[in-house]
Image (tube, rainbow, N blue to C red):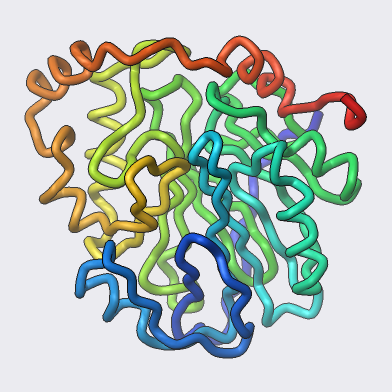
Length: 295
């Protein structure tokens, strides 16, 4: 098992913007992309995605059974085209890796935002099919991985990087991955919030070391302090939304706009059923989904 702090990467010429693809994902040209509009996007979102990027390739992928989003990011301006996957699902590993091959990318990291209870992570299968890829999860999660990250770490891929922010509360080991704030990094910024912050919602707090108070404080201190145009990409959505912004969630999130005591009461009275995959998913995910590929 390997554990280390990621180092700051050097600056290069700034990108123009970022790539975005709505769900369901479509393969789009790498060199340019026109604005994509869906009924779920606000006018603020549409204007923020109106230009093209020559550096960051971005794909949002969906697994329908657990309503999980997997994210593919790559630096296509770098000679190696290094890429990473966030929150891959075991059932869609072949789809994700076929896309990586088709786009000519080099997968360097398969990352999780936390130990999931509703699906088995795909990182174990990915490592068996792409031996050069390393699994990544937070040290606080108590899970096994090649790289155990901590708050403040930077995860480089080419000339781009993701910043690690601790956002516990849904589980004790949740993190949010945020694109950098330096001039050579994609703008607007992007936050991959896992189950901590969902679009107009948040993750449950009644298992896996969850805490309503901790989740509330995490979101308000680590996510709501980001620039208001920061794009929010959660691990799940159950209502057909693709993306939000920090500014939207500060105003419209029906749970996290309340004060702490009101939020705690809301979370205490959700009365959610026991996750049907929990007894299978959690033990597997504590070893980063390592499993017999033939099973």
